[in-house]
Image 1 (cartoon, rainbow, N blue to C red):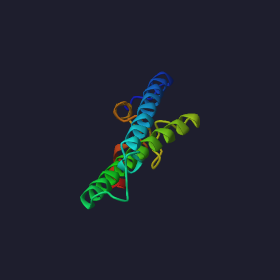
Image 2 (image 1 turned 120 degrees about the vertical axis):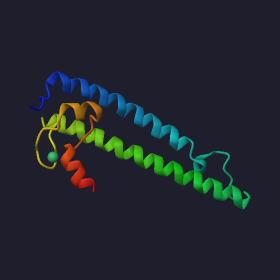
Image 3 (image 1 turned 180 degrees about the horizontal axis):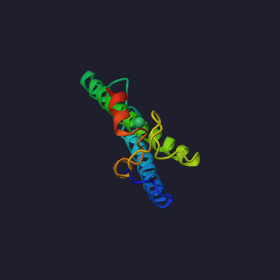
Amino acid sequence: MVKKLTKLLEEKLKKELMKQEKELIKRIEELKKGDPFLDPDHVTDNAAVDTDVREQVGHETVQAQVLALQRKLELIRSAFKKMLKNKYGLCESCGKPIPVSRLKLLPEARYCVECERRLVK
Ligand SMILES: [Zn+2]
């Protein structure tokens, strides 16, 4: 028997998600500040070619990291929306409840394990 998600647990997971949301926003801000393209000392005109390449690579790395964090942020926000609609904890694909043990590990999970496996493949 799958343990049902209680309101109490949902509140706890919501707090956890809110904490994660704040941290993610902070990390995205910090990463963006570390982007060499936004460096106030960044000079495009007389920089050596190898400096340009290094900055380009740095910029792309930052972009990739920011993108990954933003994706996670979107998942967290869609979990909030599901909470508002009383749909939190239900798989978005098959509609079955996501096991509580999974939600504890991954509060932003959108799918049950089976659907996740099927969809991510
Ligand atoms: Zn499912």
